[in-house]
Amino acid sequence: MEIWPHILRLLEKSGESAYPSECCGFVLGRRETSGTVRGLSVVAVDNAQAPDKRRCRFLMEAEDFLRAEQAAAAQGLELTAVFHSHPDHPAEPSEEDLAHALPFYHYLITAVAQGQAQETTCWRLASDRSGFVREPLTIVDKAPGNGEKSPAARPPRSAPAGHGKPEAS
Ligand SMILES: [Zn+2]
Image (cartoon, rainbow, N blue to C red; front, side):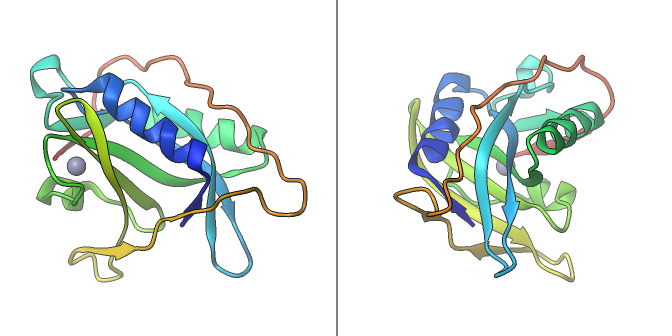
């Protein structure tokens, strides 16, 4: 997956401001015909997990996915990745992350140590769902030459707590 430096910075800031809780949200972007997935826009989502669980879990409602899909469509983009942070844990998917992962999406994890963002890693679910496969996360220095602009990050309203899939770090 390819992202611009400011997209990486948005993910890092999201993790830092949520610390010591987990942040979560979506990266909207495009799938190139070459197969490259480009992340162009960040949609932060309020972690709907109960306060005592937010340190090691995140929860996004079906509604959050729907809103992100709608935001993507409105910008001519696709929902390409799910991101979350691991406060004081390595940027590696947990068993809970695996249990709730969906095929197709990329998963970005930012480690946040003592409130400071560290490494951000990129993963996809293996086709047999046995585990995650790490994918390269390339930070591209500048926009592609066709004048493509990066849409601004626009967090949606927070969703009410309800049923959904919890994920732990
Ligand atoms: Zn996790």
